[in-house]
Structure formats: structure tokens, C-alpha cells
Length: 452
Image (cartoon, rainbow, N blue to C red; front, side, top):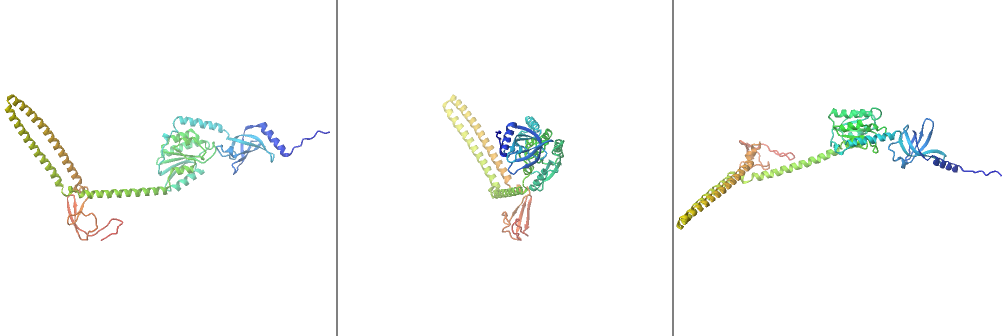
């Protein structure tokens, strides 16, 4: 009897082959060149990894590729971590990828971290170094490629938001050999040229290698040395470069940099109009208050009869002099009485009384003189204060500054054209005299109907 044959189905064969592949190889790193890259709408990536002799189909699912810091492109050299597997339905051998790095990315990342730590230790990333952007820049310098999408986005957004802005482009190569040196030189040139308010330095998205010029120390130090505020706009929102850390402001994209750089002109004009209306209203209110205050001061009795106030202070001084004379007479009378009383008590008593009286009179005299002097100085200060107030409120002093008063024939002040008749005689009071004239034409303030 012949040995029984073990027969398996195609699906069982593919399943067993898959198990053998996955158990036998496990996870491993594979390097090669990307080709036939497909970025599916589901978020999964499908591509072929090849070298000069062979190729293998690869799949990287959305949950794994979300952590990749770049978008895979045709011809890119990469290193993949994955496991060999087999797609059972078709029997197609493939590599299921869990990690992807651009070739040499590990070394570049180490260089990035080393330079970042060095510049941070020097304080180049400190917030205290960051400068505020100008609120309304008039001229902006761009350091970017003249042919890339970044410059088109920048110019489009800048001119749309602020049409009267002047833009100066310093064209540079943004990747490849020598690009970092050219970017640094352009930043230095725009600073030395003068006349600019702000710089935007950047480019569109790309791989770590594509963006590497903005991770070079020479570019970082050029940004740090810039006297003009700098906005960095390198790559996409997920991309971070050394230039971003050194710049005064980091924008996630070139378009976002343009929005940060300039305000909307229409909104700015609206705000300026509102502020202008507020200031005009405040000025009008201030003028009205000053007019009311002036009219009150003009009606003050000091203006009508300025000599009367001075005369009142003179009368007070005269009264004080009279009171002083009465005090002196009273002191002499009291002294005489004390002398008479002392004479009746005898010689020694008289002498003591005279001494005491003399002492009292001397002390009273000192107190009296001191009190009179204090009152005299106080009255003098009050009189001088009134004289200064009179000088400030004197209409003639106002006339000396170029103003004039217009009076009716009865001597009243004219404050409005209302009620004034054609041909009416008026008097204009100037600093050094008067002019008498006749009304020939009446004009009201702008905004009111003219009258004649």
C-alpha cells in the first residue's frame, strides 16, 4: 500500500508560507530606493523598494506612517524597518513596514540635536532675544527661491492683505551644496542695504535633506545677528528647523508667515477711522468745556471790577494797622497802671513790678511784632496771588497772544453771529487799541447754511 499523500489547498499553502516567512525572518532593516509610490486616500502608503538587482513590494499603513516626518517621493533613498510577509489572496510576497527613515537621516538627526543644544546653551533661542514684529511694515525683504511655490504664496498673500506694501526679493537656492552660505549672505545683505522693516526667510516643504540648509549653523547665526526682525517659514507645519528656533517668529508655512507679517489693510483703515472719530469727539468735548470755562471766567467780578478786589485787601491791611495801634496804646496804659500800683507798695516792690512789667511789655512786643509780621506776609502772599490770577484772567493778556474781543455798541461781548444785523456797528478790541467797523457779511461755521 502506497504512502498517503498530504494534499493542501492554495490558501493553506499561502498561509503556511506566510507563517514561515514571518517566523523565519522577523523584523529587519532594509535599505533601497523608492519607486511606484502610491499615497492612498485611506492614508496607507504602497510602494516598491528596489536596488540594482532586485525589488520588493511594500505596504506602510496609516497608523505607522503618521510618525514619518516627510512624504515619500519617487527615487528617494530610504531605510525601512519591517517584516517579510505574504499576501495570501494573491500569493504576492511583500514587506510590511513599521518605520521609515531617509538614508543618512539618523546621522543628520544627530547633527541637528547637537547644533540645537549648542546654540541653546549660547542663549540664541531665549525668548528675551525675540523682537516684536512691526505693526504696519512698509517694506519687507524675502529670502527664498525665486522659482518655488513659497515665493508665489508669499507675494500673493502679502499683496492681497496690504496692497501698498513694497517687497524686495533676495533670490537664493534653498537646497543643495552652497545653499546655506547663500541664504546667510542674503540675510546679511538685506540688513546692510537698509530701508526694510522685516525679513521673511523660508521655502516650501520637503524631506529632512531638502530642508537641511536651514539647519546649518551659518544660517542660524545670520538670523541671530540680523538687526531686522525675522520670520522663519520653512516647510510644512510638521517641519522644524534650527532657523525656526533662532528666528523672532516661526510660521508653519510661507502663507502663514505673510499673514503674520502684515495686517489686513481694510481692517486697519476701519480701526483708524474709528480712532479718528473718537479723537475728534474728544477734541470737540474739550473745546466745549474750555468755552464754558472761558465764559464763566469772563463773567467773574474780577474781570468786571478788578480794582475792587485789590481795594478790599488794602482795607484789610489798613484795619490791621489800626488794630496794632490799639494794642500798643493798651500796652502802655497797662504799664502805667502797674507802675502806679507798685509805687504804693514801696521801693522794692516798685522795682520788682517795674522789672516784671518791662519783661511783659518786651515779650508782648515781640509776640505782637511777630504776629503782625506773619499777618503782613500772609496778606502780601494773598495779594500777590490775586494779582497773578488777575494777570492770567485779564482779557488784555489773552489779546496779547493774538486773540481779539468783538463788542456790540452797548459794550456787550459778541459770542455768535446769531442776532447780528447787517450794517451794525461793532468794536474790535485788540491788545493796543480798538477798531470800529460795520457788519457787511455774515458767515456761519462750515456745515451750516450761509447767510448774508
